[in-house]
Length: 215
Image (cartoon, rainbow, N blue to C red; front, side, top):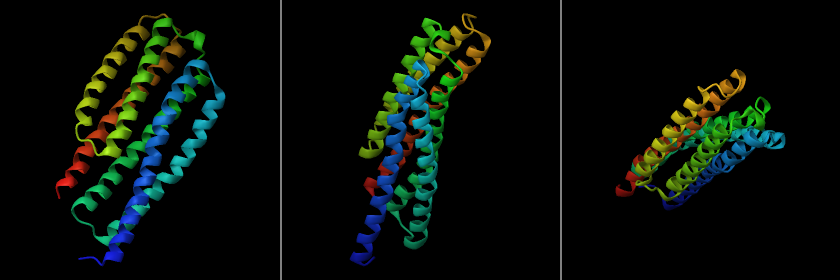
């Protein structure tokens, strides 16, 4: 059995890792609606801000992995602690890739003007952006609260995203917009779809993580 002081130090290290993971979650959840706004308004300042935040994430992501690797080597954790550290290693890459998608959405503002969009496609993008933002807020809460039930709820929201994606693809195929705009919007739709998938994947990781409460 570990000495109480060693256990306290280990708990502090786990808490520091958790805080950094929450920081990543928060940046994705906060920046996603800003990316949608940048896309629909052409706000270049938001694009620059999100690009800078992406650099912060690119720096933080490997530091979290290094901290986890260190604890795995030094502490040889079991049960709940091992589940947590393994979950972090699985979730952090999803968070980094998700913020890349957020930035990619915002950057499309450089190629698409708001007036280039058909009214229907604009409305669908707003709905996809709102839905993805809601899913990511739910994913943050799911991780914080270790809520196993959130995975099923996010699966249902993912079905909504799939329906919006299919509807937008039909609109893009109607020929109401120029080919370059249609191609960019196809990418945007896929970015939102993948963001929804990442939110669902993270909730499924929490199902594994929350199992530690029984250990």
